[in-house]
Amino acid sequence: MGVKRADAKFTAKGLAARARIIEHAAELIYTHGVHGTSNELLRKASGVSGSQLTHYFPDKESLVLAVIEWQTEKILTLHAGSSFAGFDTIDALREWAAFYLSHERVCQEGCTLGSLAAEIVKADLDVRDRLAADFDRWKDVLRTGLGRMREHGRLRGDADPERLANLLLSAMQGGMLLAQIARDVTPLRDALTAAIDHVQSFETTRAPQAAPSA
Image (cartoon, rainbow, N blue to C red; front, top):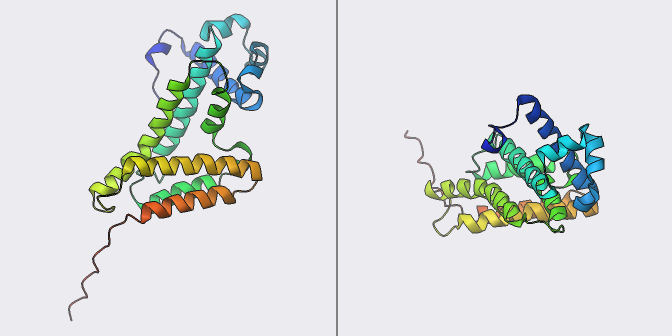
């Protein structure tokens, strides 16, 4: 992940301190909520002074926006480096589902970005547009892969990548929430399996291979 232009004014040491603040802020917001994450808690957790904290983040909104971006980049980086990165086959979608189903803390943490969003949307901060845009970036990874499946003839022409991507991401978010509540991965497994089965229902019929000549 490259350095953002907004961060160019910071030294390498400053960037490291800023990143440490963001990481601890994400954990505190997940645990205590936005309103429960005070500057004092964050200073103690990240080991910075009050002046350092306000230097990097002059207000809570700037901090929350940075946390949203950090969580989004973590997810997109993970997806880009994974075996299912193309998202352009049914097998890749099932690998994606299996990855999250095997995550040892899925029933405790759920989706890191989804859980964070659930806390942030309750706060009186102007960050909803950023959340929507970053979830759309995640959805676009799925949408692009589904589009390639259709372009390459693996899905029928009536398959809508936008709607199917919405379905897959909604199945993940809703399934993870129910898995957290039940402390059981079954709701997530059922939701993702049903969503991917629906995508598979648009698969084209492959022509049978010709029998080898005698």
